[in-house]
Length: 178
Image (tube, rainbow, N blue to C red; front, side, top):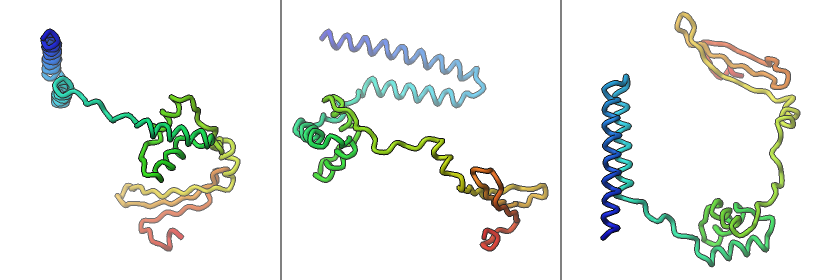
């Protein structure tokens, strides 16, 4: 009985606080330059808080069964270079669907670290060194003073920043692009 009275008092205090915020929002409604947005936000907040108060969240997803955790750990012990993604794919072949983040958390809880990457992503220096003969193309349109729409296509060399080719027209067609 005491627990119900305590919950009722907490609920009553929470309700008073929510109503005080509503009064503050109403005050801001009459003094703000954007009153409609303020009142919509206030009602959304009150709805969310009342929903949280009277309809608490459930317990969430059930934990992963122990036999599946043991299977994940066995797979990792027998294949040390496998990561969470590979374990997830192998489990999916067996008909067990688990997200790679869940498997990663299970592996971290049991002392396994992620394997090193086979290939590191390229650095900017390496990417720019390979891009000496890479071209970039842009196709855009503008409106001139006579309100005609002008189409522009341009191709530049990334490394030297030279304009390789450009064309301007009012009526684009296949021959104009090629």
